[in-house]
Amino acid sequence: MSVELPLWRALTGYRVLTLCYVLVLFAVSYDQYQHPLGAAAYMTALTVWMGFTWRRTTSAERCTRAFLIGDLSFALGGILLTLAVDSHERIMGGGPTLPSIWTAGAVLGFAIKGGWRWAAVASALVAVVNLVERQEFARDTIHNVVLVWVASVAIGYVVEVARASERTLARALQIEAATRERERLARDIHDSVLQVLAMVQRRGTAIGGEAAELGRMAGEQEVALRTLVSSGLVRPRAGAPDDARTPDEVLSAPVPCADGADGTDAGPCDVRALLAPHAGARVTFSEPGAPVVLPAAAAAELAAAVSAALDNVKVHAGDGAQAWILVEDEPDEVIVTVRDDGPGIPEGRLADAEREGRLGVALSIRGRLRDLGGSADWVSVPGQGTEVELKVPKGGAPAGTRRGRSTA
Image (cartoon, rainbow, N blue to C red):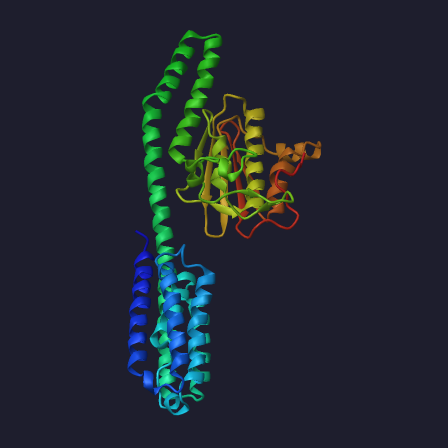
């Protein structure tokens, strides 16, 4: 049940009970009014208004802004009408206004519907009209005004907190349901698809020939599927609108990567979501358990640099080389390490390649990181592989950086 529903029911009861109280109070003091027929006409109009609108405060959907304005107008009009139908002596003596405590119901409706800001505005209007009706800053009038203002603002604030808590709870339940479904799918995949892929890999390797190639591909798909199931990182399909993504895809991407309308990236991005697709039979991907957030443009450039490093592994270390990607989330920077078990890079080879005009490392990797205010460092021992450490500060990408920029 919604946390607001009891409040709406209480407000409905309050409006009905206070109307009865106001009618009894009017009947008792009928002879004291200077123009009792005018007061009776207002009470009749107020009763008719309540008869037609009492159900409007039973739910948030029925309580529209137009109704709230009309309800408050009835209360304010009744307060001002008191000047015309009641005597000056009775007003100055602290006599009740025509709507009396029924006015608070109109203000509380604003509080429940729109929160404490709406309540503050409605209370201020009631305060001004009450002071106009009393024609002086009387202690009892100030007391009543402050009481209504504090009560309505407090209730409005509580309503806002309750709504936020309700949204948080709904989100938590949604994530829990998605997690359970993912675990169920992971069990089913492990018991069926992954075992079949592993069997195809073993049989293909044993048979040899074209079957060996089929087995190798099956092994790569097995590793990729295991990574997907274990991490839950699913990138949205290119060109697919948000509403075309499955609920599991939406929940598994804690920080979206959204393209801006002008081709630039906008908003934060989870670096893990961009690097996870590299995982496979020859590439091991290790990540923190929490999102690794960078500005979208910086995350895209970092991912492009990692892709370039993996291309270098494939070209210089061979298709059979094993590579590892490690993502580290430090307080001031993000560090991504790409390591391989290839033959390594001879000393001075990178400088020679740059002088010869082969700028893959200089531009595709080091240049991208330099534009982001970061760095790229190589550690290589002949015969023991190569390690590339990419560092990007969390300050964001400089102006003019573009995702997917050609640096060849």
